[in-house]
Length: 265
Image 1 (cartoon, helix red, strand yellow):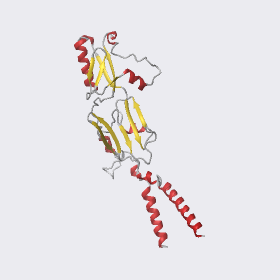
Image 2 (cartoon, one colour; image 1 turned 60 degrees about the horizontal axis):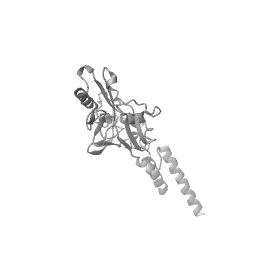
Image 3 (cartoon, helix red, strand yellow; image 1 turned 135 degrees about the vertical axis):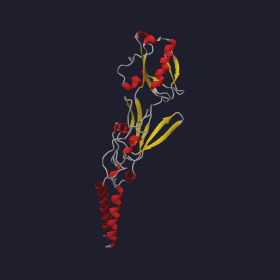
Image 4 (cartoon, rainbow, N blue to C red; image 1 turned 90 degrees about the vertical axis):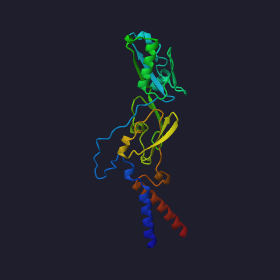
């Protein structure tokens, strides 16, 4: 009898310890006020202006009163009309080389590493006013990233690289574009590997905490790598929910019982 009771306790312990708790799968929980389910309204989004890195592709357009005078600066983009938006952006855009430079026809090289889009616009405008045009030309310049490319690996449904043509993409949008995190993914410790001029750094995000929206890494940047590690329950292989865990253990118990009965005959 004592062995049966001990076995039941062991069975219950394994069942409850191996299933994934509800608090580990729910996004944006209000953990600071457990007694208040109301989401605070004063969460401030944190996003600093993006500064250009090596291998970024810039889309630069120059407009003046007489547009014929700036045709050489603006790519026509008709080399392959069947190409995807990402491919056309690659061929028509200005790629930042390993030295942080881009090369614009007739204007020469510009070092843009670490500059914002607005700063690059002013840089090109100043160069045009010095060498090509007067103030009366009404120069209008736009500099944008030619798509925001990132990679998601690990415990997601469809890992891989994605390019989105948006200026701002948060971590939830990025993950949604690769098919969501399954129950076996660790939402509490998502790694964002980010490129900096001095190298790469790893930042950690807890997607189950609503305060993740205050993080400076809530919005992803070009060339970010997002890694979702698996929960330990996946390596145990006991099941994602209590029901699946009990079913697995019950099948195992039935198998062991059958073996014992057959061996004692």
